[in-house]
Amino acid sequence: MLYKRMSFAHAIGKKVKKLFKMSIDIIKESIKDYAKDIRINLGNVLTPDASPGLSEKQILGSALSVAMSVRNAFLVKQLLSASETTLSEQDIMGIKTAVSLMGMNNIYYRSIHLIEDDELSKRPAGLRMTMMTKHGMDSKDFEIYSLAISAITGCGMCLKSHSQKLKQEGLTVEAIQSVIRIASVIQATHQSLSLENY
Image (cartoon, rainbow, N blue to C red; front, side):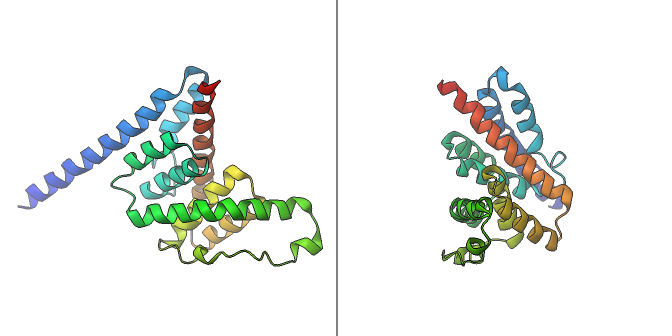
């Protein structure tokens, strides 16, 4: 009986890996040769070996959060397919919450930072952000996805805040670098795919 359970689990694991590979291969096949480096990097960064310190769920969640942020329906569809058994509905709702909030916060805090006005920076934001703590997912995962989104929008204050929180929660510098690497490759994948419109 134990053998049957183990072989069933093994078969499910193989099916999940095959589904993941198929979805990522569909993306890679859509990237033209002028972006060959991006195609190769995409295949690498979405693996635990190339993204040390992150779980499979955190890797796929980071990629999906960036794809949603750049509003690339093709990437979102393929990444949702690749993460079908890795990300729960609650995880996906949490990612959508991160995307929504970072869409506001990254613009506001980046602007405040770039204006470099002490009086302005001391003023309360006056923006509702209760979902930052009521997102319904693991707080470390939420911070990881927020960091990934902040990396592509270039909000220095947000990057600093999320990376500091992640360090406090025990995430290594290597893992933080993995998140930023994933964000940069998904952003570049989006741009490479968009070039076919010209």
